[in-house]
Image (cartoon, rainbow, N blue to C red; front, side, top):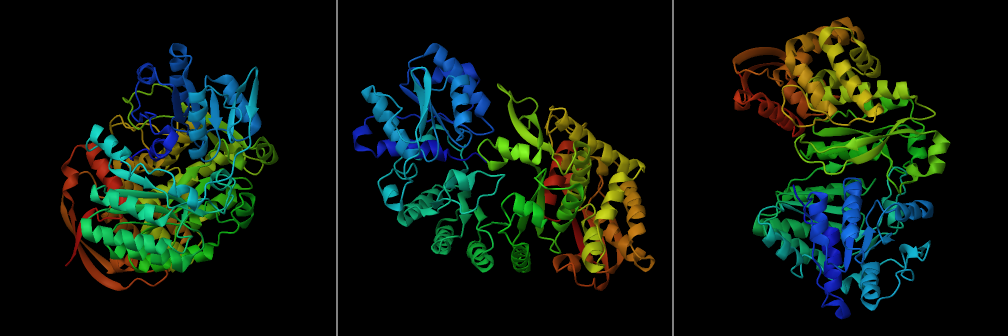
Amino acid sequence: MRALPLAAGILAATAGATPDLADVDVAIHWRRHEPEHAARLLRGHDVVGVSLYTWNERYTIEVVRRLKAASPNTIVVAGGPSVPRRPADARRMLAETMLDALVAGEGERPFINILRACRGGHSLAAIAGVTTRLGDDIHMTARGPRLTTEDYIGLGSPYLDGTFDRLMAEAPGVHTSALFETNRGCPFSCTFCDWGQATESKVLELPLERVMAELRWAAERALPYLYFVDANFGIRKRDLSIVEGLGELARETGYPRFVYFHLTKNATEKNLATVEALTDAGIGTQVSLSMQDFAPEVLAAIKRDNIHPERALELRAKANARGIPTNNEIILGLPVQTPGSFRESIVQALTPFSGDVFYLHCARLLVNAELADPITIARYRLETRDVPSLPFEVDEPVHVEERERIVVGSDTMSVDAWRDAYVFGYLFASVVLQGLLATPLRLMRYALGLPLVPAVDALARADTPRLAALRETLARRADAILASESILAPIDGLGSKRREPLDAVCAEVLLDLPSFAREAEAVLRRFVPDDMHALLGEAIAWDLLHAPEHRARDEVHTFEHDWRDWQAADARTPARVRTRVERRVLPFVHAPRPLWFDSFIAIGWAKGPRVLLNLV
């Protein structure tokens, strides 16, 4: 999905709505060209504004270098999340690049004042929130007051003033999604994130009339995907009325089809009402309830101990009962995290609900987050690697290699322990999220009340052929990060696409699915009482049924328990008895292997049926 460029659009609309700047011609460049070509497109402009984040920072700085070499009088100003707010880092960025000025925080007011200063030939050094050169020195001013709801009324909207209409007309059919703000601010100060610190915590609302008019604009232009970029949607009393209004738009126009947002933390009933208002209108959505870790000491270290796991689990239960998907995130490499606490946390991410998923991420140091502060790094003795962030397609031109700073060790988790945790975490995530061992592992944890960490550790350490191949595959991925080589990598036989570690595990499993199932069952039987071995075998056989080999055939299988019914319910309930199931493989197995594999992965993420299962 390509989204309309909200930040650039807001700045363009802001200039257009400012009377003394109404004659300024603002052009938006959003395509990523080869750097020399991009620099040529920008030549001749008086002022160039660029937005920096992890996916474009180095590329953009290279474009600016080439632009300034050919057009030294062009003033180049950078904003965005990767503009450093720490004075030493900001001074270093200006000293090491061809950028003329940096803007920290909200950009609307500084942008207007920069345009006025450039037009009048004045210095930028007096503008609040701007870091710039002043002679041989680098001058940094404090940020000015934040925008209020009243301030927003006087600012332009790229949705309503024609800015985005012109952009869509220039590239018909390219933009399929839109980003929206209904408020700014985040009351949380999680150390791995810079959202709360960047917006100074207090949540301020954008005018409701403007928000609803922008949403109507998107619906009338048949944009299927909307993304609310508020840090905590649902935190304001009016937010429920916004989604109810969105539901009315969907009933009237048929759009949007799917809405994604970051829901406010802990507000269980409020969040459920927000999601139900969308689903009742036929709009797809999901509830994102990200814990990052479950250990109290880790949550305290990352300033997230005001998040209540029991409330999140309660909301997952209610959403699952209504057929609404939910998701969670777990981060490997956080301060105070130990090998044992990480294993327990990711196991806790497996809930009793089949509609709930989790994502595993490696901790990254974002330039302005507290976790990236030298004091924090020294306090927890964080060890990191700068790893290339490469496009998914090997053949896609890189132009300039971006890099991410990934945490691979700390004073509580050595680098070797991090490597083992990486293998454990991604093995567990893969076999659960893609339905390869989800049923037996949920059975063991919830129906039988057995600890999962020893069992998953045994899977990760097994020396049988298929399980050993999984361990070696993930160990190679971890070693590539430790060697600062790559995060993603292609998989033999599956085309040129760089793929996630989860995909790599699935590819290995599907090379010999029956052998994987036999080896996994032999390991898991060691952790299950003897009188439950048959039940475990059925659970594994059920998952095997949903992971078809690369061929089509019809089969009839008999089960003593109704696993489909059990999966749809709370996994803590007993499985009911006896049903027979006919297996018929979906048509995608006839496709070439890369397409077949991508379909397998996509259907697994969507929690859709990979096979047609009819009761006999």
